[in-house]
Image 1: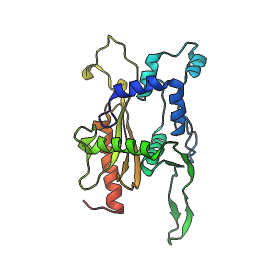
Image 2: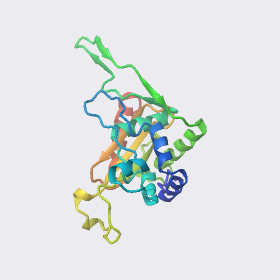
Image 3: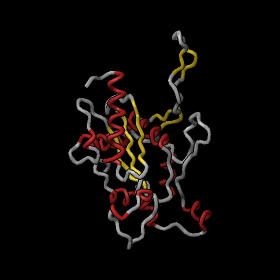
Image 4: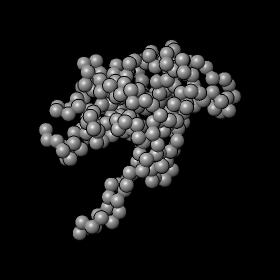
Length: 238
């Protein structure tokens, strides 16, 4: 389901779990709260609940909204840095780290003036077996023949990731879905998150292309080039 981005599977899971429990699981992953990165005005995003909707709009939650929530649509709001923290935690076995702006600052003479130390934010409360199942699906996104990002493979290096699409506006049932009839500023945003290499990952990436439509065609190729550059610089040669 992860490899082929099967919405129906996640619809079923969402309905079985329910909106409020989805919120709880999202919080465990670090969604809906700040990452504590040292930047002004960081937002924590939003993972809605039935009570939140009642307070905000004065109406009850509908099951159809749970379907949207289950695939990251609807009222969901996340930031790229939240998703980078999330995917890095999945890749490293479940540890969430505080993101840092720099690794270290050196003087012109090479003396280290300041250095960032890893700070643990928490652990993903999931069994090793569950995390391994997720990682297997993420590996397939890039490396299997049915993966949604199979076109962004890197020769000699396996990496894992997930494509995504974030709607800009909701669409009415009677509206056409033909691309040529949708103004550019209303086209969905393209997402891709990844870690590399798949085994013993060294880098996590989150890419958003505004109005890029599809993660596989717009965001994944950018992530591929970022990963190639990092790994070539630090370890690998093409």
